[in-house]
Amino acid sequence: MIESEFIPEPYSGELPEGEVSWSSPSNIALVKYWGKYDPQLPANPSISLTLENSRTTTNLEYSKRKHAGTDFSINFLFEGNERLDFIPKINTFFKRIENYLPFLTEYDFNIRSSNSFPHSSGIASSASAMSALALCLMSIEKGMYPEMSDDFFNRKASFLSRLGSGSACRSIEGPVVAWGQHEDVPESSDLFGLPFPFELHHDFKSYHDAILLVHEGQKEVSSTVGHDLMKNHPYASTRFEQANQNLSELIPILQIGDLKGFTKIVEQEALALHAMMMTSSPYFVLMKPNTLNIINKVWGFRAETGLNLCFTLDAGANVHLLFPDAESEEIYEFIKNELVAYCENGHYICDQVGIGARLNPM
Ligand code: DP6
Image 1 (cartoon, rainbow, N blue to C red):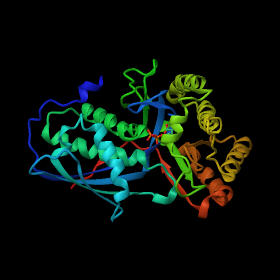
Image 2: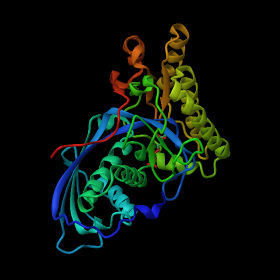
Image 3: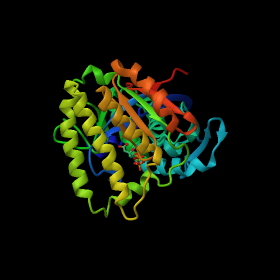
């Protein structure tokens, strides 16, 4: 599909007002997206596990304005409080997607949003938040164009989410989503994410992600700044090649359930991501001492028990621990006994692979 296919024909239906609500999950990348070009196109393909419990729920009320303006009319409440500081971000998002949703200037919008995880947890909420909002807007478009197929709905929701935050395009569906053109992934595109197009081994359908909150609070360097630093990065082309290669290797691993192969690629990707941060100009470090303490403990535990516990990192200090359901009891014991001490205030989040966003009944 090409971009122009997301520009709608004149709508057949009219919607004076209404309300819609979606709950959309976060996702954790196995092969990392780090580096992008305008407009929000990835420098390399990525693939992620969709999560189940870490979600944003967004309600969108819309009512037709008497006269369409040139500006957007947006009110935004986050967890019940008016948050004017979020409005510029939503405005930028609306500007980017206006061409694909021409009705945006024709309505007054009231947005209410909340997260299932604490906002201060340092968990990237842009993926769940932007995808939830994009899905609400797609529901409005579907109301005006009811014959839209589910497949097109999901692709366009992912396409719009990407324009809000790159990783958000991998949050619409599950359990595994690939984003970015890659020769081994049929129909893959830089424009939107698509569910893994092969049979996924059952072990991965119920994989666990225990998110250890090493550092709660805002990150010191935003993802946007980090992506940008890949533009003049001395190792950029090697890194992009590595991501492509790792995705090629991960595809059969996900099909046959090769958990050892999975661990090797996922941990290398996590450390490669942080190696890019540590070698950019300016350089920066997002890991904290306890991030490394946890990594060392995980390696020790694996050597001792042979269990399939591995870690990954996003653009922060928190550690995502990935493991199969069949080994979860023993691994949760280990987390409680040995790793909680490294978490800020002892906090961690128990999550698992999920199948994507949900439309909430109104
Ligand atoms: C390290 O999607 O947050 O989590 O497109 O600027 O919003 P923007 O960046 P974002 O970057 C995510 C980076 C990552 C890796 C990943 O999720 O693939």
